[in-house]
Image (cartoon, rainbow, N blue to C red; front, side, top):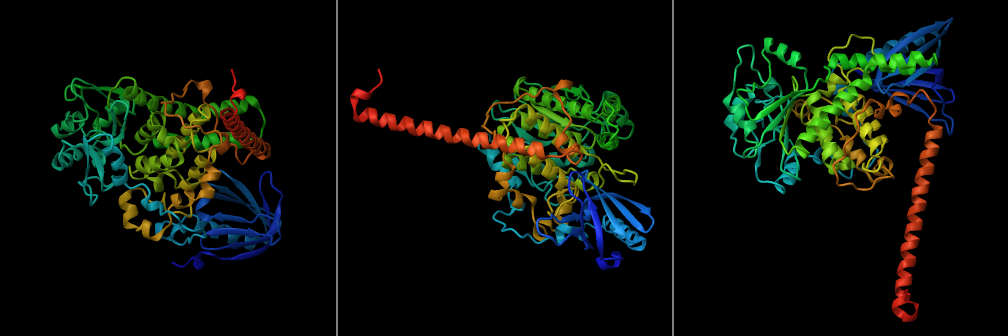
Length: 549
């Protein structure tokens, strides 16, 4: 298919762009295969370059011969284009609708994007499982990298290499996979260096109504326990939902077959509920009625902060079991690709200081989201403004980033990265020139040859100038476990995402610049103090009379 076939009117002059808290711009609107571009061709005027894939929905309005298109984006931005001429407006609108809803992944912009920057580090090779395993090998010899899934036949949503207990062979893994949802047998998620406890993740067991059991599955998860120790299974569903799953062939681990494991149910909502919650939250944030009662009731009705609290509480529980109880943990929900990953990745943020660095956080997103099979293409196909009925869309990854922001806000000096890094990841998960978040699983990315045909987001992020921009000026390395408060009054609305386009950022930008200036000035003074101390010490050694009593 040629993009030209979908573009009825490639260019219109005299288009006026309206954006919140920015001056209006009049210029020429151009449509390309992947971008909506508006340029005034004047110096010092910012051009608009908007990816079609970032467009969630559009609305058309007409007053006489003047047409307006309201463009609602997946990053929650809303802009208005005033287009002279009804025919031109209708043509532009229908072209945008066609170009923003392309089904074929291979027609997406990352396959056409050519970087204008020097690729110093190929991000596709930055976080390979074999490299992560080298770090594990330096701490313990109780695990091995299995190639049982090298052709993706055992579990389509797992990577080719997975870390499993050394004493468990591949045949046992194959049999255990038949007992778990979508073949997602228990694999290592995190090793706690402090006490050797581990966190594993999986899909639900397929016990069914007959109480089916699998000796190989029992052997696999028992292999992670130390002699005389018990473990915890954290099920991210209510007991009722887990019971109902039995009728559909799913279920949970029975105490009779897993006597060394204690099962805990912590309810985290399913994807359809989360999508509805996001839509209600964004609607509340865009409500300009300025009524306090209306705002608070709409915010509460969205239940977004409740979901944040549920996820953080479950992650804290997993971290507590590992660090304070000295017990290993297995986390699963139904599929093991949504709430499970929220919990395992947040628990690592709490426990592991390495995950709070820029590079460590990239590795976490790779391991616990991309390689672990979170279906980004399905979940991020629509955002909060889409008019079409939600299918499998859900803000699972956005909720995870929100939870990370809550922890960062409570521990502002413990993270090497700033809020800007989290916002950047949110934006690129929904629409990007990079191939990192394309597809639903590793097998799909391999089939599409993404490492050969697209550029990795990490190649962009890991350039020195970008690392500096995303760095937290308050960062001081903290090797301790950090325990966030999950009390309702401790959890705030993430304004940097949800109110970003609804208010001017000028005052916040100025405050940030002032903070950076104070920190730099403090460093200068500290260096002067150190220099004077060295000079004094030198003088004292040269002249004994100057020595302080």
